[in-house]
Image 1: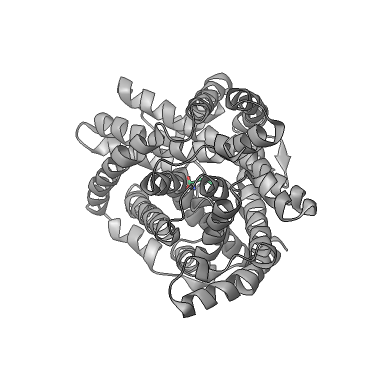
Image 2: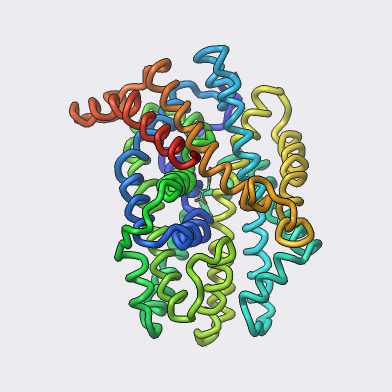
Length: 434
Ligand code: PHE
């Protein structure tokens, strides 16, 4: 059975795919919008502290669990103890729910590529964004196109495409971002954006803010839904995974900070509201592009590269349910992809319509889209990460000295995995949801 599982061609291929999973819409779209909703710099501070301290532990634990057990999530958890099967199933389920809103945003990107290619003149970007997201049929079609692209690539296997996207396209994306940052920083009142991002206003601290920062940290690093476990399970050699974890954390944080420094000065310069929600980036960026000579070409390139980043993350999201279906139900990848396409569409279509005809439908006072975003990042991912730490630390007995040379670091890792991180995850969920 093991021989039929996919494998990375090299360690580099694995790192590239894992970074590709991490860097995506979470950095460019979700990070600025959540930070804008939770008060800017204080949020950033808590987010960075979480990323630089505790996130390393569940990240490593997920990779190590995958690498050790070499199974899909459900089989992996079940092999530790039959009773854990349900916890394993939570991972692909979370993946399906994430895909159902993430792919909508992927669809928005495709629309913006189209708009820039045609060089359409738009007078008011917030109005345009509102009208586009409210349009029932076109918005749904874009969601389905993005879903189809991801399912198509995932169906062809894990290696093809991802390496090119990450090796060639991501460095290009970083260069373009640097160019846009320098433009943003030269806008009038840009300093207000930097202050908003880097000068903490401690009166904005709240328990939900801590949970939102945790949710964003897990979401952006792809921790807590089995993506890293599944990717880790395709590592065939005994190579050390520590360097991969550092690379993921470093590149992901770099992209998020670059996105923030590009967006916030522009928001303040154009007099927009940082807390305007999920549309934030899609309203601000077109404003920036409209000010740049040949802005439509820059816009086209930007959204195309963002699409590549979104696809590599999107593939990793659906790889979790695909791997579980292929291995558990013993069906072909193509069949698994087809089933998944249908299942995700069933949830993604109402979520897309929640900006328009279904805007009155609310769950816990949130639109379907906001609810899916909230429940996955702030509840299911911390919960899955918590369960993973307990299983990896207490039952599978993953130990720091398996991958950390330094004895003190290995010791800290062990305590972190068994006690500190589960307690922090649990406490943040408890106070944030209370
Ligand atoms: N980390 C990805 C991003 O930032 C999203 C993602 C979440 C991917 C969960 C895989 C698993 O866009």
